[in-house]
Length: 264
Ligand SMILES: Cc1cc2nc3c(=O)[nH]c(=O)nc-3n(C[C@H](O)[C@H](O)[C@H](O)COP(=O)(O)OP(=O)(O)OC[C@H]3O[C@@H](n4cnc5c(N)ncnc54)[C@H](O)[C@@H]3O)c2cc1C
Ligand code: FES
Image (tube, rainbow, N blue to C red; front, side, top):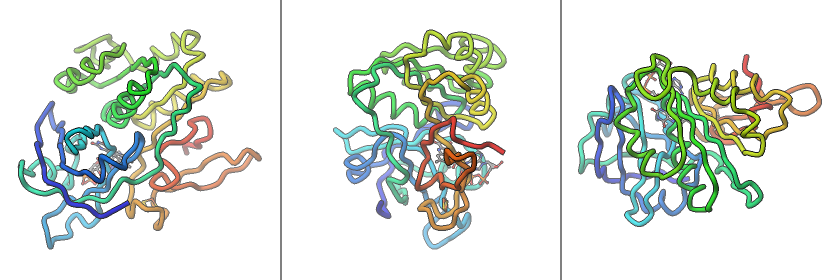
């Protein structure tokens, strides 16, 4: 991990409050792997408001251009600051942070299940899996059609996918998790990765309970230090002896075996 600064190549709106920022960083492009994130300073030089850096998944890495990107939703002060940054200015960030997802040679088939902005880290994972010649199905669920402009990027990956929206305004009406539930037999030999709101992850746990299917969740707990010191992002993980241990999302994660996560 390094404290870095990189030129903003573009920072474009691609939905209501949804942006993609592209940043020049040979270091991130050389060192980042799927599942990792960057901790971004979201305030002007010399000003510490907001005080804490904001974590964002690495959405894409284009090694040939030394450019990585973040897909983000404007939520509050930090992301508003990000959305106002102009092409040609600099982004300050620390990274890559978190542990990488290790993709073994044994698994050939992967089901990626993303909810809302949770699709961001799965996109980088999908690109990594494609490079390794894996078979991927991407199920993405949204509240409405706000991500419709983004979907061109998903189409360009050339993988099979289905879109679900809660209001039926795009793709199929319903939840991505209902799709997983209805088709779980079909995916019994797949390795599953999911990222999205807590309720979605809890539904995935319910669906997969007792199924003996490998399922990894990328958690997005609120963070402070981002490097395993403050314990602010600690989550309960089953220890195999009927009890649990606390692990940090920023250092031990963000990827965890979903069936070992205790949501309470
Ligand atoms: C490992 C990790 C990866 C992430 N990747 C992405 C990403 O790729 N794209 C993206 O848009 N966001 C991502 N997030 C969430 C992102 O960090 C927050 O949206 C951001 O910190 C909000 O900052 P803010 O100052 O704009 O909002 P704040 O003023 O801090 O908060 C505004 C609202 O957003 C909510 N919020 C803040 N942090 C989170 C969070 N972690 N999860 C859910 N709600 C939150 C708050 O509860 C509040 O309602 C990620 C978070 C983590 C921990
Ligand atoms: S944010 Fe400080 S330990 Fe994870």
